[in-house]
Length: 172
Image 1: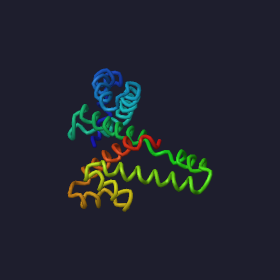
Image 2: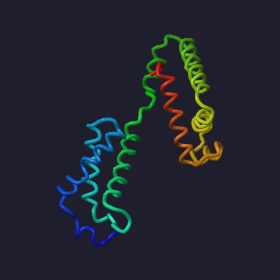
Image 3: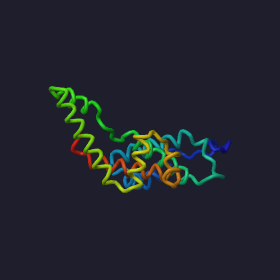
Image 4: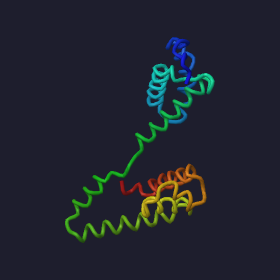
């Protein structure tokens, strides 16, 4: 890290004026919401300005550093806003069933729908989902099984889960 980065710290207004619009355009393309993009860019610029002493010009340009921080913020945004299965809704449906037989029928229908949806996935996506959620493998082990890099395994799993969500939308 540059030890004297704070001594050449530009005024915040200059950084804001120079990078805000390009970061906003970039972020809007990534998150799809102008309001979310504005919040993310504002927070990233404030973070970068507050941590300017950590910036090392020998490693990257200011814009590269800003985009690295921005990409990290975008990833955090997606992680924090990921939709999950509402187990409360499943519990509510199960408790509304009047008899054990109703619950069994409902669970059997759900199991059949999940099995059918899994069969509609491409082979690698199906295998990644099964390995992760039925066998408990981590992405490293899944990557070994699929013969791909760990990063690629995570992408395959993510796409498989997205597709499953589409196929099982009726159960939400």
